[in-house]
Image: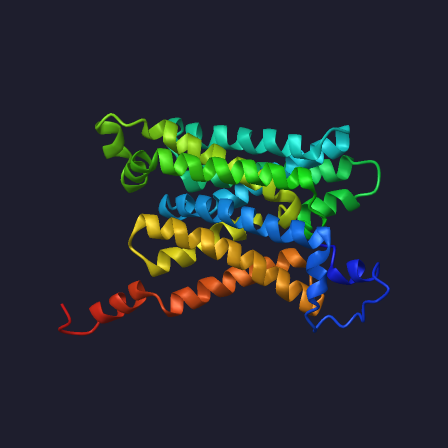
Length: 300
C-alpha cells in the first residue's frame, strides 16, 4: 500500500506524470499485470471466505486472523526466516484456538475472537519493538503493496483461491447445513465441527496469502465488505457466494484504477471501493425494502 504508481512512472522517461489520465501502456508492465491478477485471485478468495464470516455472524474473524498473520510475519522478520511462513503458522494457530475456546470454554465466537485479537495485537507490537534493523519491511506488511506482488505471491494466491472454491463446491451441502444450524447438522450426523474448523483454517490461509498485497491492517475489510454487500442483495446462498467473489474482484480492480488515476495508496483505495460497493448494495437492497414495507401499518 505504501508503494504508489508515481514511483513506477518515474522509471519510464516518456511518462508525463499526469496521474489523472489513463495511459493504457501501463498494462504492458509486469508489475501492473501481477497487480490485476492478484486483485482477481485475492478478491475471489476473500469474497468467498467472507460469506462464511457473515453467515456465521463472526465479523471480527478477519481482524483476529489478520493480526495473527501480521504477528507471525513480524516474527519471521525478527528471526530472519520467510515472513509468510510465520504468518501462515500464526494464522492457522489462531484458527486452531478459536474453535476450541468457543466450544470448551463456553464462550461465544465473538469473545474468543476478541481474546485472540488482543493477544496478537500485543505480540505484533512486541515483535516490532524487537526488530533491530529498519522497520520498513514491517510497515510494508502492515499496509500492504499490491504493486510489488511477485510471481511466487501469485502462485500462493492461486492455490488458496482454488482450494477455497474447490472445497466449497465439493462440500457445499454440508457447509450449507452447518451454516444454517450447526446443532441440527451435528444431530443428523454431519461433521459440523470439522467443517467449522476447516472454514477457520481456510480463513487463516486466505489472510496469509493476501497479507503482502492488502496488508494486515486492511485485509479484514476486504473479507467482510464484499460478502456483506452480497448478503444485502440475495436470499440464495449460491448467489451470495458468486456476488461476494465478483464484488471482491471488482473492489480490487476499481481500487487499482483510482490508485493509478490519483496516485493514491492501492490498499486503501481497494478497501474504500469495497465499502462503497457495500453502501450501494445497501441502498438497493430488496431486504431493506421488504423491512420497510413491514413497518407500514396494515402491511402485514
